[in-house]
Image 1: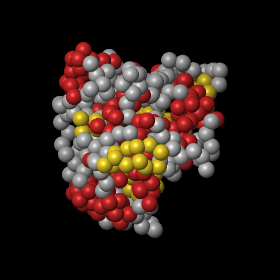
Image 2: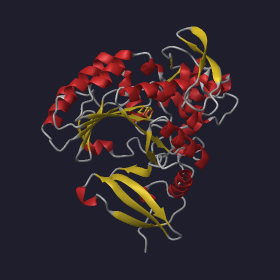
Image 3: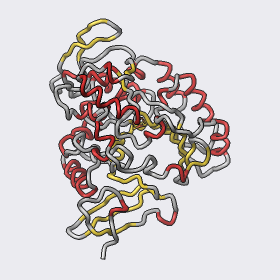
Image 4: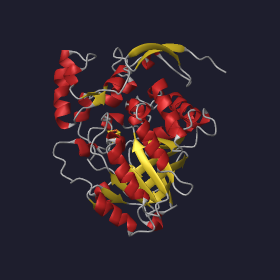
Length: 393
Ligand code: SF4
């Protein structure tokens, strides 16, 4: 057994020396104890100076800011390019013009407010309109912007829609972050979805284990709720979103451990983000650590061309190389992820590259005739999205 360090962290308001059982730890584990408190005002961030606060006020007028004290405590404020800071703290680069507010064409597949049906088997419910921490790279940032007009989810019509479609075997509950709902409210939704016999798999998409793991470790009712909605014939998947190995703190690992004990299956997806995880060593460390903690690496996404996200984008061919090099440093279980583009037309996996061409394949497709279709595209090292390519000769 490897070295198990002991650190001091606050828990339930008291200072206690606790052994960290879950692999890597760092000084960043010394965070806030208890349920993490939200921070919505950049002026209250001690790590920013007055000039930075003033400049960033223009950014947050357009793209709101919100995070947790816990997440702020993980940031190394001496490093302006600290990856966790880049994930949670606004930057002026967000004002660079680029991309759209709906880069994956979700509006095309919206069947009623906050209900999407793009792939035959899967219905998506945008249950929550908020997140514990608003990721600066979020491709759904439109949900949090002031002029966003789409109405709230009507759970009755969502359930009616799914009930009438036996082909929908999967329901993805996301948002926003579903774990922002109180446990009793979440229970009502899970109860309704679970009543539909042909729904065999429920997914909950959440970044809470990374940004406020205390939401899980301190709410036994939530754990019981998840446990109660798993049967021999229906699974519950938690789709976590760890972007960087430093997010895998001791309390985050504890939250994952508790989630696993409910019987939930854990999968992780992350975008590849410039200077956050765009390094094969960082990516490999993330994937290996996740696999050690029982979380299956699922997708690494090409950064969607979303308004305000240009500084996060890594060209597709470079991303492919990073993913391949990272896989070479992973165990078999660490390299289970696919590198894919969540395009308007489907999930397109980048499968290979030679001197002339890049090869991609529709892993999921909105049009059934595209499913499994492979494409050979002429190499373009600057390409950031499918539209930047032309067909191979
Ligand atoms: S948790 Fe997901 S929905 Fe929420 S801000 Fe981050 S990327 Fe967007």
